Length: 206
Image (cartoon, rainbow, N blue to C red; front, side, top):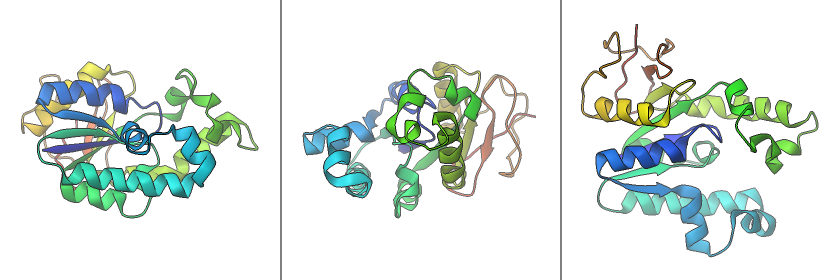
C-alpha cells in the first residue's frame, strides 16, 4: 500500500512517517529529500535559481516517481505539495491520503518554524504569516481521506493508531468506532480521526 502524509510544516509528517513505515514494513520517503537527491542541490538553491514554480514542478515529478514504484511506501510530503496542480488527485488515486491536523497555536511553538523565510517575510510578521498560510492550505488538506488530530499525541501513538486503521481494526484507545461523516471533529487522547471525501477509511472517537 501507499500512504501519503500531508499537513502544515512541523505537523510531524516526517517523524510519524518513519514510525508508520517501520510498523508497516514499508519504505519511507521524504518528498523534499527526494527532490534534493534527484537534483543534487539543496531546496534553498532550487528556490533561489528556479523560484517556487520550479520547485513545485520538480516536486510533482518526484511524487510521480514514487507513485510508479512497486512495493509499500509511506511518503511525507512537503506542506505545499497538495496545493499544486493535480498532486492531491495523484496521491488519492495511488493510496491513502492522511492529513495530520495541528492547531496553529501548536505549530507556532515548534522550534524554528517561525524563522522560516516564507513566514518571516510576511508583512504582518511570522505569526500572521503562519495564519495566512494555514488558511490558504486548509481547504486542500481537508480533502484527505483521513484526518488525524495530532495535538497532544506522540508520533508513536499516531503511527500506532494508523496501523490499526489501515488494518480495519478499532484502535484500543478509541471509545467509539463507527464511521465518521467527515464533518465532525476527532477528540480525546490527542488523535481523533474523521473521514474526508477522498480515499481511505476513518473512525472518530465519540
